[in-house]
Structures are given as structure tokens and as C-alpha cells.
Image 1: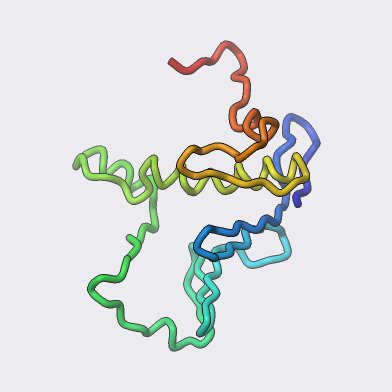
Image 2: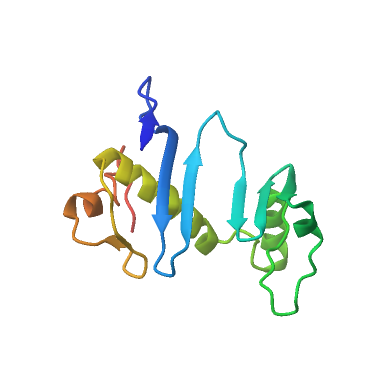
Length: 152
């Protein structure tokens, strides 16, 4: 479900709500509107953690003091992606947000947009990066380039 801006040169999403259900049973509710706190909320059996660029909150607050185990996956803290990119250009290290991470993050919004425009539930095949049995949705994965632009 989505609402769109249709004024001027744009027809992009103004607000959306999508539900992604993964093969392992994980459900992710992906939404944005002016009526909710920005960021990302992780809800589990023992409470929730909400994080955005300005901070982190939890219920119960004790979740914020849990000690990580040595084998726990940890995310890198980055408060300045642009500065990180420039530092990586100088050092040849990988940036916190590399092209693969950007693709993974961007694809969710694109999938939600296509489903909303078609007003239907879709099944995504992540390894193939195609929709299952939906030529109309697959055709929307690419857009015509304008003003003579092309990829080589």
C-alpha cells in the first residue's frame, strides 16, 4: 500500500506500508509516513529495540546493557558515511556502506514500490533477483534511461 506525490516532475512514493515474509518465518514490516518515529524497530520475544540516527531506545531498557558474545554479529557504527567514503578512498579500505550493502538496502524500497503500483502481493526470488511468475513486475525492475544516457 502506498500514496504517491504526483505534482511537478515526481511520481515517487510519499508514504508506504509493506510486509516482507522470509522463508525462515521472519516478518519485517517496512513502512514510512509522517505519523511515525523514523528509524528501525526490532521486535523480539523479550522486547524491542529502536534505533535511528539520533539514538537508540529499548523496552525493557535492560536490552541496551546486554553483553555481546564473541561470535555475535556486530554492525559498524558510522555517523558520517561521506567522511567514511573519503577516508576509504585514501586508505583503500572498504566503506561501512559499500555497494553491496546499498543494493541490499535499496532493493526493499523498490520491491515495495512495485508491489504498491501493481496493487498485488508478489513473491521475490533474492538469488535470481526476479519475481516469481510475474512478467509485469519483472518488467518494472528496469526503467528506460532518459536524455541519451546508457550503460556500457
